[in-house]
Image (cartoon, rainbow, N blue to C red; front, top):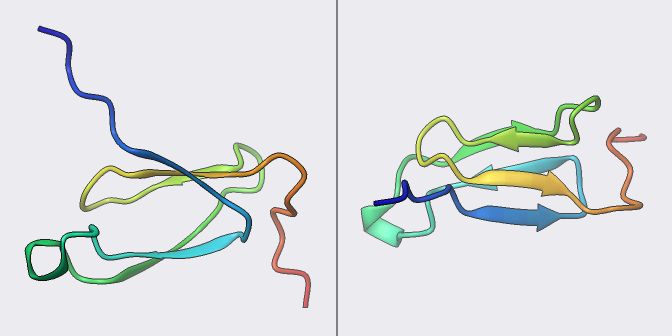
Length: 62
């Protein structure tokens, strides 16, 4: 049997909050910042992979 791949979510901002998406069955809300080199970040709780969309900026740019 093939292992299940983590959920991959494309985003357009370099910062994201993840709560596992399961309401009360999820996990504590964590804020994650996209790695500028790889343009992705993985949630340490649920393994969701957040990938920055093509053309989106990897820096916060204040």
